[in-house]
Image (cartoon, rainbow, N blue to C red; front, side, top):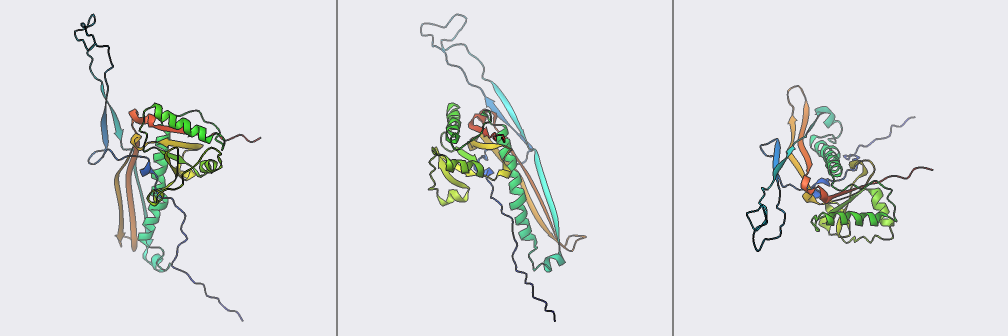
Length: 283
């Protein structure tokens, strides 16, 4: 005699882990692309200091203040480069026969969490690292030298007169492990809940530490110190639609489009310090 045992399907989906966006923590929203595909901003020069001619103008000059010069006024152009989209369909019977686990609303949320957000984060972090104004030679980061290298990064931003408050330190889980093993690093882990929800896990040298997945950073990423003032994060368009029973389909058609970009400002690139990690060669 054979007995067929019951298989029960729960209304539960085994979701992949996905980390929330970190891009908004390292960029600013100072410019809007509303109604435009590109934005041009000015870079204005300054005048040099002179010795004032108290007893008269210097030879060849008519002003006691020094030689009169025009200020330079150049521009830099930011043109939107990323216009991305996705689409998928959920058949009406497929939705019914999977106990409503395959529904359009949860599928769209999953698409944003597992695909769209990681793509934007990866692109943004790559742009900031690539255009960093401070990029020392790559080296092998260890628990013994990591703190000294982070201090070098802070010093480079100090030398560039970047804002002292508001700087952030981006690390991967591998670098964060070295930080915890370092005898010199004392991390302040008493971080408010609001900051923790944004991804801040500690503070070092006065900088919030943000741990980002290794898949979202360039290869051989060591750490990145940056200030949000240095990079403009742009999301010009976010359009996500669900069509119920559109022509030719019995079910739901989901479509999404997002236009985004990240621009490092030329005069503020020195507010970014990117240290690449050189892995030790196998013996």
